[in-house]
Image 1 (tube, rainbow, N blue to C red):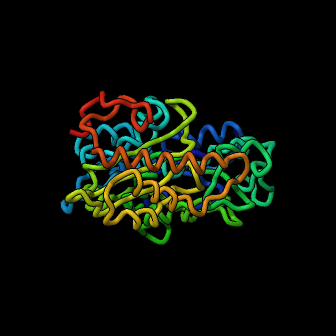
Image 2 (cartoon, rainbow, N blue to C red):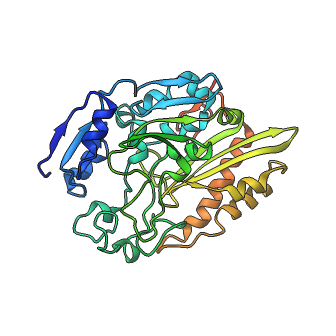
Length: 352
């Protein structure tokens, strides 16, 4: 690691001022940042520790039926919160499918939004990477790239966003609360992460000094609780990032789909909202034929970025399976293997 200053502010305003200096980075649990510092992929000159800022560790069920989640809430605490898991089962399932219990006990929801790609070329400082060093090139383009993006990629970068948590959040119109040098602003999570274009080093809409203080889910999100699932396909059942994942949710009335939500993970540099698929499902009967049409629409613009053409068909199958699971109804018990294609209906009563 390089030498760096360490600052522990006592207020959000102090934190924003300290992090506005060039080379500064916010430190929460550090489950991603510290790893990147160890390998030299990131070299901040100042760490601003936000772990003790007051008021950022609360889960608040709002009067209008929505929920506000402080940025310092731990992943495990949110997933196991009874009221939250009941209202937002797909989000809880996504959280419990990520990393390991030890990491979920430490990692924060704000940090989850800010985690960096797991592309091996980004981590390897001997490799060219435009995210790590703008203008260096992208060795993944002609390298080992079977896990890389099939949607929204460019010649400058084909990396994917690794978050499970963000996928259902995008599907349910979550909003990010941000404090910065110019005050507070709210940004829909769907627009928070950026596609690479020609500037892949800029991964989000945040500017210098801005700090995520919380997330909000609108009251409409809880309306999908009866038919909402998250499905994650990975190369091993636990402690692995998604090859492809899908958050699928339905509102079904009288045997007809009245509303649908779909977002994908593992396919792009940001969680991918499939609005065309959602529109196709309105008024449809919830069956495999309708879900197949929705899956085709979601991947209509997909293109391989190397040796990953299989991910396009894989994503379609994951979408169909996720919608079939959602149509069958949210299980009363959180599956023993959350989000896994191999999960059963045995587990804990997190959704009851």
